[in-house]
Image (cartoon, rainbow, N blue to C red; front, side, top):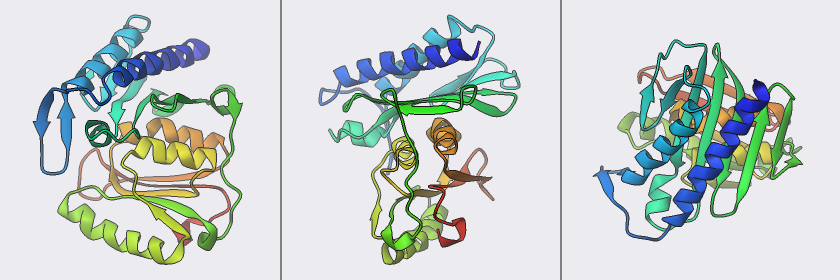
Length: 251
């Protein structure tokens, strides 16, 4: 069962990623354009493809995705999907975005896959086997222990409250870490932490579908994740993920 779940997640991510890659830097249909975000018809089509592949094998499982939910959300088995994490990057022709798919059973994430179509990088994590890989190669978080040596990604959602909370964190990291990055894809940020490319990822207001797969990757790669429900926004979280050597209280 666990192996089939992981295979299904991987196949769905690769299929959606291939479709997305085929539309990169081509004319796109915009569903909605807000002040700080863009929703594409391709987002919906990517999630629909992922759903069809998952539900074709597991028809009783629930879907919790950025582009909508399906099935009984109290079901034991639930899939958490972000069909294009980094849609604004994609829309502007910046080749930094990903497909993120996680499976959760009874509230515990059991499998996670993140696929970056433009670099053909596939992260795969399985709680059953305790393994996390990048293109088949085992990965570990960085061994750096000093914030002064670290590269830290900081995400800031564009709500007023998130900006007020996030800007001081950004300023602190810019002063304390070696380098600070804002790259536009939370899924890739947290996958990069699992890979040791980044030392930490911090976001004060994020959705679960952005980070569910990556959280498992960081955990299995030897890192730490602190996830807490947002104090005022439903279905949002604050998240800190880092390699095992940097204390949370330094971030």
